Structure formats: structure tokens, C-alpha cells
Length: 333
Ligand code: SF4
Image (cartoon, rainbow, N blue to C red; front, top):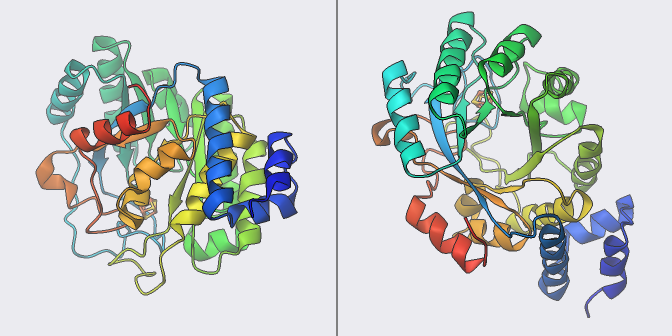
């Protein structure tokens, strides 16, 4: 029987730890009820019922970090290292702009060399100069205050920096050369510089508990955000976690719906990791209240295999597929 009282409490804005724990485990009719409430909240905050479509350019896989869950780290041997050139990047940006795309996401490994930041700043500045109504999101990891400020001054609009997990001990396990404290400082610096900021977690990390995931939902309150995401842990074939079991798609979808109910104003993407977990996962994400989706049409085809962030065989959604699922979810572009 459907747990109406739990849904009613969530609808009234009662977000106790016990209730969130229960809702993360919802299945069947209860899950459908949760998703329905999430879609209602989305409609109230975004009455035009549009999905923000983001084109991703994976600029470089050069990374100084050693994240245990990732295929792109300093230990990965098989991928060749690459960095797109200036002309190549500008051509891609123009191509994407001409397709009428409004949002461009630059993603790369974490590379804090000043030469790299100067290069990105130059690209951002020139793209914004040529296509002023194109929103640029950066996802480049932890950088210094001066580097973030330089990128903001170059014209970057938004920055995504995932906290990954709100459990600081677990954070040290998954990112042995980093700390949650440092990550939080970076997110707050980005806020202070006037970026529209996004953050997020991963569901199903080794040694992660449901209590950790409940705490992740509440942790989001600490930041001034315009975007938040979740992804399902996929044991990357070349990562240190290659023998671990994958995360639970059902829980990730429930988490997305709860984020929508708790923080209805956020742009929440339905990420390709959901699709990797199960075919149709990204459509389910939209049905759970997501309102953004990424299209991997920015990275040159021959380089895509060298950006295997969570899987060397990851699902790379193309434009046709994205259109199909957005339409099926009764959202506009
Ligand atoms: S998750 Fe990001 S920072 Fe960590 S190794 Fe992978 S690319 Fe580098």
C-alpha cells in the first residue's frame, strides 16, 4: 500500500532524516508518487516546462588528481593525454552556437597550471565576445581564488564543483589527495565571485551508507546554488574501484526527486551516468524532476574515448536521442 502520509509530509516541507531515509528507498507506487510531487514542484518553479540542453566540450583529460572512482587520473595508463587547441575550440563553439544551443559546458580534468587557466580564459573571453548570449559553464575542479576570479572576469557565467560526498572521511577515501573542507571552501569562493554555482554527489560509492546520502541532501542547504546534480557510481574499468558493485539507479532517481522537492528552484541535470546504469535512465531522471540534460556534441569524435571519466564504455547520448526523451517527458527545449 502506498505510504500517503510520508508523501504528504514531504509535500508540506517536512524533511526529517527518518523521512528522507524512507523516501530514498521508495519503490513502485510510492516512487511514482514521489516523482509526481517532484514534477509538480518543477512546474511551479519552471512553468514553461523546458529542459535546458547543454553541449559539453571535454577540453582536456590532463588531471593532477588521483580520484579512486575515476578512469581519468594520474594512474590511468591507457588513455593518451590531450588538450584541444584554440582554433579547434572556437570552431566547435561556433558550430554549437549555430545549432541554436544556449549553454556550453567546458569540462576537463583538474589542471591548475597558469598556462592552462590563461588558455581557458582566452577562449571564454573570445567566445563571450562573439556569442554574448551563450552561457558558459566551467567544470575544471579546485583552483586558486585568483584563477577563479580570472575565469569569472573572462566572462564565465557558471561553475560546477561537486562535493561528491558530505562525509569527510569517505571523501578522503575516494579522493585521497583532497579534502571536503577544501572543496567546500572552493564552492564558497565561487559563490563570492558571483558565479552561478552547481554542486552534487555520487550515489553508491564504496563504504557509503544511506545516512551519508540523507546527509548529502541536507548538505546542499549550506550553499547558494542554481544547479545541483547526482550521478550513479559506475566502477570505472581502469579505476581503483573497478571491482566494486555499481550504485543503485533507483536510489539516485529518488534522490533527484527529493532534491527537486526540497530545492525546487534548482536546475537539475539528468546525467549520462543514469543511462549507463540502465538504458532509459536519463528519461527516468526527467520524470523524477530533472530539467537539464547534456549532449556530448562538443568533443571531437576521435577524442571521446580519451575522456572515460566513469567508464571506457560510457553511454554518450547524441542529439537525436536527447530530443526523443525530452519530448517523451513532455518538456520543451
Ligand atoms: S574525477 Fe575529475 S579530478 Fe578526479 S581524477 Fe577524474 S578527472 Fe581528475
